[in-house]
Image 1 (cartoon, one colour):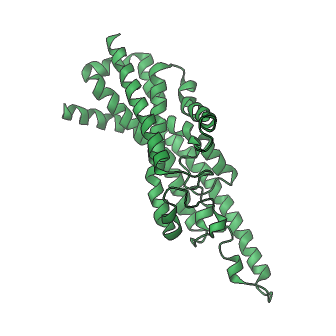
Image 2 (cartoon, rainbow, N blue to C red):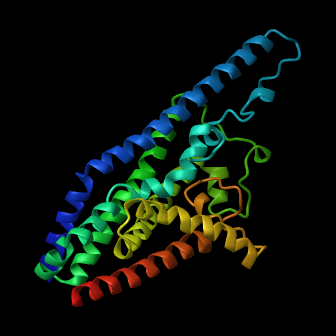
Image 3 (cartoon, rainbow, N blue to C red):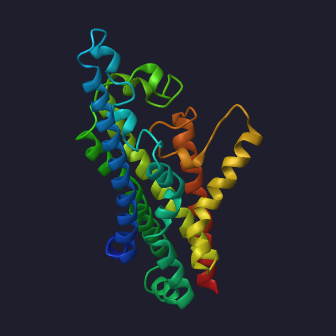
Length: 286
């Protein structure tokens, strides 16, 4: 049974990472982040011009120009959605997470291939291997562009610590103390969170692929769910600001906690696994 699961998982991971849509989606994310790097570079050039203009003035103070918003930890897309390209990425990332493999899963149901695969293995092996594969590629296409942007911006923007008043992060945010002491450590610690939410979101598309046959609906399903939750959460609990679209941002607009980040991810994952596996079993009976 274990060897069967291992073989099925290896096959699905190979199919997922060699799928053309995986590279197309990754390219889209990288292009958005490349535009963000261009915006950051232009901003840094303007900042350097301001320094050159004021350098000879008696009132010039290097400390007054230090940081001033021109820090890696304020300019990189992971920490800011201020540029058009970064804002676009944070709007469409649920769709990007769903693009690589979720539709291929739905297509297997449309063509009947899924029934043959289930007959060769088991509903449990089939579904779990599919879920892990979709989770991995969903996490990668969301995390890798943000990581590439962070490293590229590190070549442009200084990695000095921004002032407390210049960032939205406060003591109410998850790992905020790490940010103000070791910002690079904070950035590295946030990468698995981005991967987690990319994978969880891709799993939602998997759930939609079980029940619906329309390709566009499958791709838009996670985005639609997050938009609805973004409206429902404030109505249910005005004191708890939960914005699912902001979950991959290292400096979201609203305070976050470990309970919110990991708790909601666990709930979404549990719902996906329960109803997804239930649907696979139902399809086997049919």
